[in-house]
Length: 409
Ligand code: PLP
Image (cartoon, rainbow, N blue to C red; front, side, top):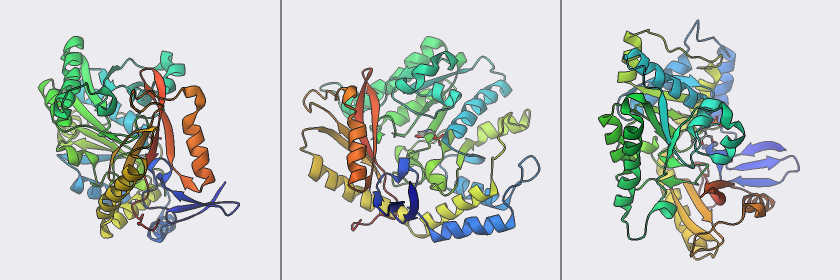
């Protein structure tokens, strides 16, 4: 049982201390018990804890919206606050559909995504993801979504193929799928700029996202980027897509937004979508009781202000590079570590049984559970997961330490 948090450490009820090297699941980007964030939460509680958005907006929500829009890429100038990542993805899928209805393109109802992706556990978000073992029991309840190859160079790049050519080849799968189904039937393509839970911190190769953006524009399809895990500074820039030089039409974010101090997620929306709906029905046909929750917004605003005022993204870049070097020095030659990758403080190690053939361990050996148990024994929180490789589960470990991490930790 977790009892207390102290900076990058979590203490359990026996007094044992764990270094939180994964932020839970890339959530706790400020570590634990940050006094400035706790004070902001208490102060907001003393003002007002809850005011329904059907009646009122509230100050922390307005300020947080301005904070995000001023810093977001492209023309993402409208924000919709929810309580987490899956809710943000659901909102994005529905908004994309409503946008096309209001534009008079009601034939557009389908989404395209990628294999080995994760966009959340609610039914819409689960439909949009390509995580086979999570989807399988619920498959009769899910909407059909075409799944393309992930931009996962370690396993998908062909012998002799350059990184750039590989990226163009897998990006072009989007165009092929759009033409196969008919552009007039497609709403949006959704993917993560740096794949988290299902692959273990896998960024795309150079040129992939520019080509994806180009294809979406050619066929009038929206690009939804899911930065629930990789966003809010985790990769060294506030938004992960900044490093790709592309701006999406809709961006969803969550985990690092509130850093675990309160549950919050957000959907950022382009002017084009916002204006179409504003000038049309004037109303996004969606909503949750706790959207724009004042205490959650106050916590998130305090988190984001703390990150900016303390120049923590610089630390993400510096410590991220140092940690990656250390991982390469320690595990680069390890017989069971096939790949070390990631950006900023979002790093992954892929575990393989055979480095030459990249064959994963048999899932029955439950390697990720063993790694997690051994790390917890040693007082370390890391995030081992099994993805799906060629229909088989493979293993990786995700590291996402807090942005306050220092070399001494
Ligand atoms: N999208 C991505 C990329 C995620 O990593 C996750 C959670 O891990 C989600 C969506 C779902 O977020 P939540 O668990 O807050 O519903």
